[in-house]
Length: 252
Ligand code: PEP
Image (cartoon, rainbow, N blue to C red; front, side, top):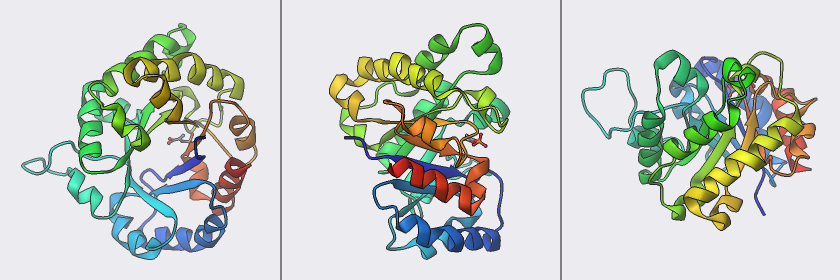
């Protein structure tokens, strides 16, 4: 039985004051949905304030990225141990990191290993671009992202691995994938690829999310699919009612 999982990726939005305001709007309502694992991923600057606000609650905090090195001359980067001071989760390999900051599957793999070493739950993003989708390359691309991204990871860490399937063409575009299409990628590509790496039992226990223009109105279409265990939510996670609505849909 996989516990439903909903994470909000706030991207580069919200000052500390705005972040506090959003958490004060969603906090109590999210706490009324205990059957869903809920994670907020604000910008780094809001992590200390939100970690104090959420202390003792069942709402988790995540970083949107981190470096794999533990310390050193990496100007502008944030180390895994620094993330761990405030968070139990980290998003790795988001398509915006891959597209705008040149992150490769090898980088993703290093970050994933660092996250596991520091006891963080890793939300690893995979997904094809529009060109790749239109050229029928979805399976090949996603399979490669999984096999390189997760290479060398011990199956003992299964409980701290979450995969987010996010077709790049569906992110922030308002054009979500069809739920059936997304479920097919999960059942025919992602879970088999995880099974090749970790064995069937562990693969069956790993949560796989869908991400890409999820809203409170379309969320239940995704969550009623057999393989979709939750969502990574971008734009809609910035709106209290939307994010609460998505989380409620995941509880059903
Ligand atoms: C995301 O940033 O991971 C995402 C899925 O964005 P959106 O929900 O806005 O498409």
